[in-house]
Image 1 (cartoon, one colour):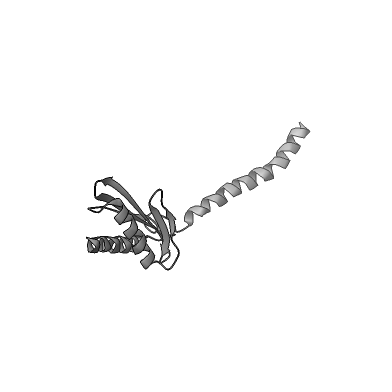
Image 2 (cartoon, rainbow, N blue to C red):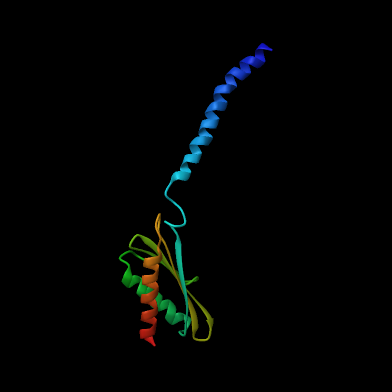
Length: 132
C-alpha cells in the first residue's frame, strides 16, 4: 500500500507537467496565420502559342521582373523565383498543336501573393500577345 502511495506521489508532478505542456502547445494557435492573411494565388491561361514559344517567353518575362536568379526545371517546364518577397512559379504545358497552358502561382509567407502573381500573369500574357 505504501509503495502505491509513493508511486502516486512521484507521478503526480509529472502528470501536472505533462498537462501544462499540452496547454502550452495550444497557445500556438494564436499565431496570425490563417487563410485570410496568407494564401496561394494561381492564375491559368490557355494561349494560342506553341509550347516552346510560351516556355521561352515565360522564362524571359520572369527574368525581366525578378532581380533574383531563376530556378528552372526544363523537364517540367517550371521556373521559380522571388519577386517582392513572394515566391513566383510559372509552368507551361502544351495540350494541342499551337495551344499551350500557362500557370502562374504566387506564395508569400503570412500574406497573400495575389497581387504579385497577378502582375506576373498580366505581363506574361502581354508579352505573348506582342510575340504574335
